[in-house]
Image (tube, helix red, strand yellow):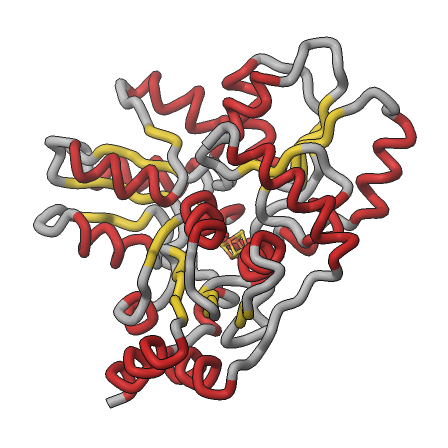
Length: 307
Ligand code: 13P
Ligand code: SF4
């Protein structure tokens, strides 16, 4: 069977498979570690394996390669992109820096290595508030590339920040009317929202008026939250792949997607078949040139201080 063959190859080659929460169940079944962007990057930094097969999108595998220049980092399908990461380039960042010589650039982890290399900090949805709050007031800040996450950070911290006009096409369609419609159908449900969602600040302001206190969480934050919550039902506003992880970690509860069509086609490019081929043929290797990796590593390591 393919699954057994993957497990055998992993042992034989001293390889690990790291899988993002949005991956297909068949891929999660062979993973050594499943998590959000922050936990996956920390796991990539600490692994003793010789080969890392990254079951996720390209910028995630690139982050693992930056943190492990001496290891073989493989992505089963190099076409696994990200609409958000593609929305900003290093030249865009340098242009902002030229206009703000004293400025601080905070890049969401959903960016390519060249962008990380010209940024001061990398952050994820799990630590973005802490990082922005630690920047001395008076220094101009650019947050990129997600405008919804940026607006959420601005609303929560009260900090004046420049926000890049990018979005994730999957999360952008999870709007406030869609969430409100689900709330009307499931009045007893708790509402968990990924801050990349298009509803962002509207939900932050409007849902409390309906007597609700939505929780804004990274995907791993959602896993932790449902485990300890006494609630039996949750409306989940993020990519639907997280629901399988929630069912694995906290079974017996009901998870209702805020939008059934919130499916990241890039994440779904990674299949068990491709993971098997990747391990067997040791393809497709992700390599980041050392001059870029060195600078990007600094910005990622600054993030780890806030983990
Ligand atoms: P997290 O898993 O870090 O919450 O991020 C979600 C995401 O969209 C990854 O691309
Ligand atoms: Fe990128 Fe959106 Fe897919 Fe996440 S869900 S990988 S942000 S396109």
